[in-house]
Amino acid sequence: MALSTSSRLSKVVKQIYMELTQGSKVQAMYVWVDGTGEGLRCKTRTLDFEPKSVAELPEWNFDGSSTYQSEGSNSDMYLIPSAMFRDPFRKDPNKLVLCEVLKYNRKPAGTNLRYSCSRIMKMVADQVPWFGMEQEYTLLGTDGHPFGWPSNGFPGPQGPYYCGVGADKAYGRDIAEAHYRACLYAGIKLSGINAEVMPAQWEFQVGPCEGIEMGDHLWIARFILHRICEDFGVIVSFDPKPITGNWNGAGCHANFSTKAMREENGLKYIEDAIEKLGKRHQYHIRAYDPKKGLDNARRLTGKHETSNINEFSAGVANRGASIRIPRSVGQEKKGYFEDRRPSANCDPYGVTEALVRTCLLNETGDEPADYKN
Image (cartoon, rainbow, N blue to C red; front, side):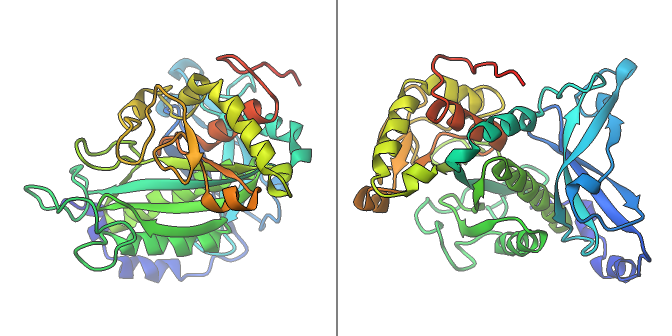
């Protein structure tokens, strides 16, 4: 098991300095999505005051040529503060600041999916769209080998690991628990965690969140997980199929509802939405992973609790379907549905926007409509 060298540094020594007072200054760590659409970057600036809202935070900039977002000859990119959280690493009064990225001409960068998603969510605010996303992830050593797996071979077959307990069943619980507490401190709407089907694989759930809040909270929850894994010396992978063979992949199932779906006889609206989704399957497949479906093709095989990437299906309590209606929803005739197609490395802004475009704005065809300001 190869741990990073930084994890071997004494955290006790570091803590001596972290306990020093910082006077009237506040450290604000700006976080953004880089040009891959999956990676996160961060840097910190000192403020002379504690911001009470994101509107008080100054814009900033960075070198986009070093983040796959611009050429060196025109490299300055703008960081636009968009959401603010408490910092669980430096603690109060310090902040984590999620930013949108704008190019030199003030237009959104290619991987700034928040910009479009925010506009779409404002268009349907009266329908009160709620989202919850179930983020699966895999813990790896720096050598790419799954955390806790034998160095020469494989653990026992899947079966005892899902929601398991015990040293031979739960690999890396310390990291999952640290992440849970750090997210709650930060103010993220983390609703639960569990060990997943493949050993060294875990899941956390974020939500319910309304509108644009879903993407904000999930991206910062991912950032916090990366930082915690950095301290522990391991890597977190959001690869949809980190280990080939008879092992479960990793998804990011999206639960969705509107006010009408949550009220009496809401099942009718759920069924209407599913019918629309069935007519736009390929559009959603392309929206549900950064490589326009190529990553998910390794995961959505029709096996290991997934649907087939080329077929749309729906069913009550069916984890092998594209869309699952929870049994309780089928019985109560109201609630929400679960889209099981998004990959673990999806952009939550892209997923939630696609759901709203199809289900609430009644878009058809393989491409999104162009909504003008």
